[in-house]
Length: 177
Image (tube, rainbow, N blue to C red; front, side, top):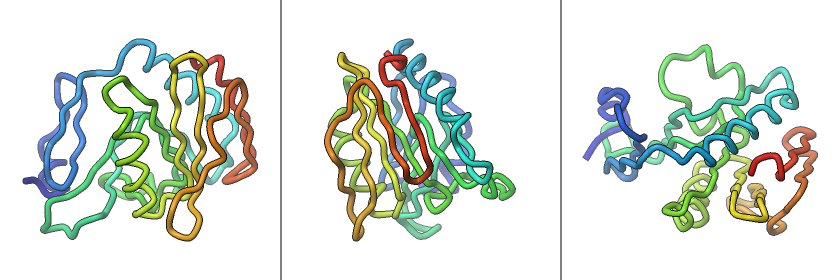
């Protein structure tokens, strides 16, 4: 069982990526080419649309803060986050409280984790917006927004995603696949 601090001390893995769930280390293979292309395209589309006080960042660990420093911790590595630019000035891992939008791209082995487990964790820590992207045809996005401590969504969107909150954004979903 690892605390978040112990997890950070492990450093980068040479293969795949890791996450920490209730102190347990989860190691996954590197994402597929299609997954990485979709993530990169989404990053490019978002980067030019986020306001100056926010920044889009790919593949970065986020301390969910669901445990005290001495307890087994929780850390996730989402495909993309939109975070407060001011958080970059602070040393250490990005905190959930710094994140405005967190994005997971569903992989064949992560469907339940992304749609159920992470949805619950991210709402529990108060991340205002959670986007779930599925690259299976037709490419779709579910935009979850925090309301009264839980996420609500309007279902899957295909072709084009538009939103006014947390900032005006338009995503060409077909370009992701």
